[in-house]
Amino acid sequence: MVGRYLKGVQFDKVYSSPLNRAKRTAEIALKEMNGRLTKDDIILLDELKEIRLPWQGMFKSDILSQYPEYETYHNSPAELEVDGFTPVHDLRDRTEAAWREILSSDFDRCLVIAHNQTNRALLGEATGLPVSRHHSFSQNNCCFNLIESHDGNLRLLWSNVSHEGVYVPTERPPKDGIRLEMRCVAGLETIVKIDGEEYNFQDGSSSELLDRVQTSSSGHVVLIGNSLSDLCAEVMQMPSLKLGDGGVASILLSRDDPSFCPQLEVFCASTDAMKLVERPTGMQSPAFL
Image 1 (cartoon, rainbow, N blue to C red):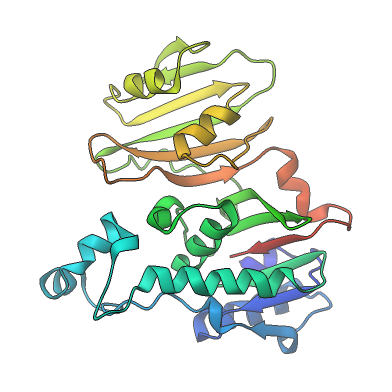
Image 2 (tube, one colour):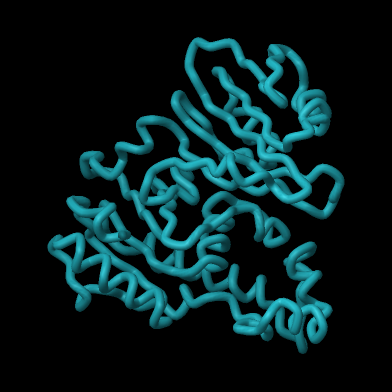
């Protein structure tokens, strides 16, 4: 699946976690891509290993009964500490080191294959989010993220894009929350659709919009129009996030849980961003899973 989607894309470097599930994915992907790189070219980085949590592999019912720290992990990840060890801080330290290693090498396109929580930390590092926002990115199995690097500056172009493209799971309502879907269309006055009713959104503040969004009974709100970039960045509390023409963002919000940080469920910066795998050389674009 991964290799077929990336077939025809030429990578200069491939990095992978040494854990077998990631390493095996990298090997299969390279074989299906049938490019110039083979499994012998995979660079294994210990820094890309998955987060170390004491309850990994356990049933949730057992975790809840044995580890009260589990709630801390979900509500305040930066404060999680188990026997003096801080797993999320350790993961961010490792992914910071991984970025330094990757970006110090010479390439035009680089493929990085890691794990769910590792990807979240990589994305957090790339977008400048604090450790407390560790859960701000959704990451599905075999999803794609694309980050562009230019003169050491990183820009998020895709997040949680599937092999089928930009897919917003609108048929799955968010649990006790709201899905805010933004579609940027140049030249179109912004329209807000809440439970099938349309509202014009021109000069209102984002706080006024979010207050209105909270009234949604279905939990699914759609914004279509131009000039959504600032609003998207403000809602996500992520100044570096840029939503251009043809861009799509799906953001999960809580109705009444103040500890819940906005979560970027799906993101594609623009229609041009989808074509970046065919972009001419000259700009580093590390893409990772």
